[in-house]
Length: 193
Image (tube, rainbow, N blue to C red):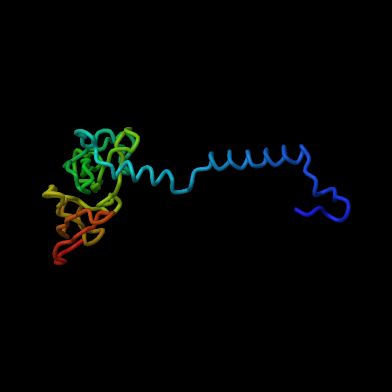
């Protein structure tokens, strides 16, 4: 190193205060980086937990432990009309698929079809996807599970003047897990909903 020809400039001399300030700034930066989680970190962790096969038998989600998004009148309970369970997405954990509707002593209120999955934290089951929305005013019959395929006949109404007792539209559906989602496979379109 060659000595400078003139006097040292004041900003080129390092003092204890400069070292302390630099160390404090680096400490704050390291602490902030350690506390800040990347935006996709929790998703990656949840995905990794889901991709990891279970170590023992896993119970299917309990349909009675879920609150369903139905627009039932106050004081009217939700009925689970039908439920089937199986490992639909091939991750080693069973899902439960349910047909639910508001309770009615007379008539047939609209139904919803929901796929339930276990909560990642081990809490109450949750709705992972809706296959038939209750607001679409549909009824469901012939509901069953064949292998990993959910099958049902979806009934509907051609107009507002069609009596709610007597749906006049009908179409069969199958739902399968493909890649990363459930895919609806409608049957023939004749007299369809």
